[in-house]
Length: 356
Length: 263
Image 1 (tube, rainbow over the protein chains, first blue to last red):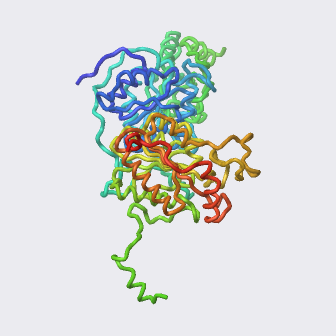
Image 2: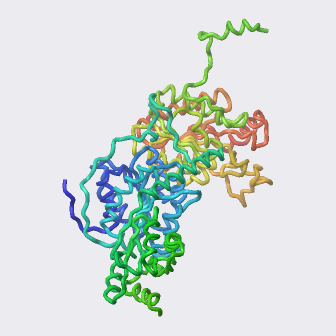
Image 3: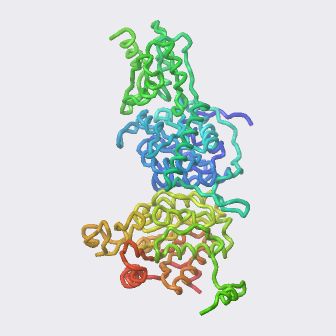
């Protein structure tokens, strides 16, 4: 079957891609700006076609714990929410990470803290990339910059989640979730019939019982488990870094931006280059693992780096660690649900390059 | 007195009247002497064995004294966050409707932090079995006041007795879930005498059969004791339970399926 071209919102693309990826279960709770995911799935009613379970839970807390239950059965399960709802899910997420379960969590980020705003922001970077809940753990974090990527990353997320037995977060934002673009949808896949050997599906006489837990009362056992996680994260850092470069070949100055900010910065690069400034853009696609090695190498070539993000400056900390003092790094970005304009970025660049 | 040789004469297969249930593992139970958890585990294990459910059963253990339940019964287990077991069970049963899915939760887990998950799972009529052990106290953390703690009852966080004007009233979760259209069978039992053990086992067997009908949630409360945190001997705690817990949490069926009641 060939790919199908549709005009869709990012949120709708995630929902349609989930059905086509052969997802077994989606558990959600309404919150702006991502409610279209649950609405689309309810209307599509995939129970009738693929057998996918779609359930509106009583809370984000319940939804993520439903994901835990389903993931522990070896099923392809997911949830989605937006910032305040993702905060509520953190308890479940740390249990899922601690039990080493695969799943997909979509965060269509809005401005905060607190109830904040329903407009797009990138202020959940720390929460997404540094763990988010209690204990030493990481999610694999993918940052889509288009409706196409919101669709494509569903399949990729499940692939990575099952490969590493690790929860994956798709860190989108209210702009990409709500905007409409054309999107090529992959042909539908059948739901997997393979049962991972660790899954709790009822103990047959042929194997020992499977136990899914994140509890180890023995400190030595817990430390061994923590070390096992570190080893896994290091392997992920080694093998799964994804990023995209835009006009970096001759760049003297480098913008680092993901998601909506990367879309804005692509235009900023064009505007700045028209004014004679040799600007490039590195767009991290994986935020964990972060493209640290590439940024460190680029720090040998460029004079200044700029971390452009719709936050008070969160990703900049990873950029600073990556370049380790080789070049100055500045943060620029709007907050509170305001999307930075390409022109604003150029004005800021000029102020730091030429002096303002 | 029997000679050693006499005992050898007695220990023969034809004289066997009691043995470890196959589903119980060799792991040593982590419960205090006199606690009702062990007895309840045993009943559950017997039912799973007798009903041939080992390959169908997926249990969800709570946070509380029975957090390590997955070590004691030889079936597949998931260990939930505090109070969230009914949410896990919801997804498991919906994704694998042919399985026997149950939660095992204490009163802190089910009636305090997990109130929402419990009520909504029951209200949706999830086809699961919820086993609810109510001993009126937080056991594992050392005897703090639970939502089920009786008025006037002394605990480490109500050292002068539960003052309902300040600390609220005991919550009768079983009565609440019995009012929900999603529940199919709701009963309150105990395991403190052989007769009550038999009744509880009968209730659990009924619940297992009802699960196969997919007509809604089955809910079994077991009013139990906590000698350690009640600061009593096991025998004293049984007496105290009969005199104080049972009047407030009366034993018996709260909701029975219509076809049953019509008989």
